[in-house]
Amino acid sequence: MGKLHLYTDSLFDTLRDRQDDLADCAVLSLIKHPDWIKLINSWQTIPDDSPSDFDTDLVRFFEFYKQKETSTEPGTLKNGQRFFAENGQLYTAMLGLYSLPYCYAFADGAEVLVRSKRIIDSIGERLGETGSFVMEIFKPGAFTSERSAFLVCAKVRLIHAFSRYFISHYAKDWDNAYGKPVNQEDMLGTNLAFSQIVLRGLLKLGISLTEAQHQAILAYWKWIGELIGIDVNIWPETSKEAFELDKLIRKRHIRASEAGQKLIGALLNYYRKTIPDPILIDQIEGIVAFFLGKDASKALNLTSNRLIQGDLLGLVLKLNGQKNRRTKNTYVNLKRNLDQQQIQQFGRLMIIKLPEIARS
Image (cartoon, rainbow, N blue to C red; front, side, top):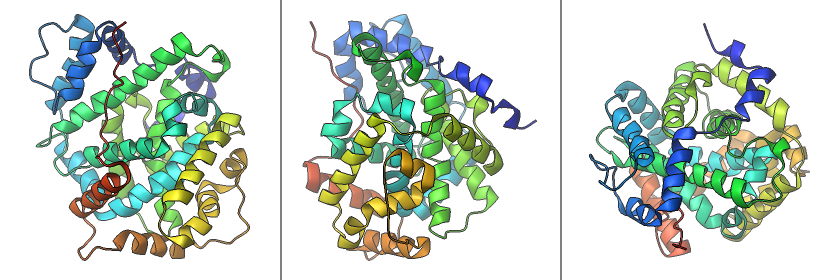
């Protein structure tokens, strides 16, 4: 039996109250022991044996990843990594032009994002960290010969738990009507934005995708989803299921919000300052609106008076990404280009780090 029967309002109402107990308990341990945060940030991979002073909750958290190392699916991983190696340039472009703005249009989830000052005040660094996460999880050999990807996923999962902790303890303006912060439904929606929505963006650019390719990316993000704390029993297996799941979440949550409009404003301003191509800068709001479609664009108060052709936009994005390159678009070339951009802009490579807390 497929997953379509699961995509109901009644079930998804319960998901708004579910979070991630394993990570939340681990973060309580880290709050009590800030030195452990610094230690984890110094790791290159998850060690075979947890430090002897780690408590039970933190040991249990990292044991989950040690168990996953023995249950990898090489075929699933290779298929996803191959797709990214062939399409990584446009894949990463869709994350910035479609996936992130799409998340901002979901009013309740945007309430979590807007409460992170770094997303508004240091949006370039946050985008750089997102790019680093995606490059790490799609690295050839990730999760098999490259074990560092497990640590990156563990850090992202803990960062989500830190967000839940700080909002629940310090955000006095949090409205319970938003649901619990970083809940299972919102995490499912974000995972869809990094997979299904990216593929939809490629289709809007006139790129043909087979059902096998679609399922390969869904399977890859099912694997990632489990590693970052998502209940993958609900995750779609086919393009039809992914379409219906996204349709349900859109119906439930796309609406105008001050939080979403503040987030998209910060993102567009950042693009206007940093995108080197004058054609893209001049039309950036219209390009984002083109991908988002009518409902999400309206929620974010985006307008476009220009008719944008997807195939021509795809050509511009490809040419823009190929500047200063003489070789074929591969993972190595894309990674080198993104690293150079980060060093030029920030003076360093952006990496995923847990928030370090001063000992009181």
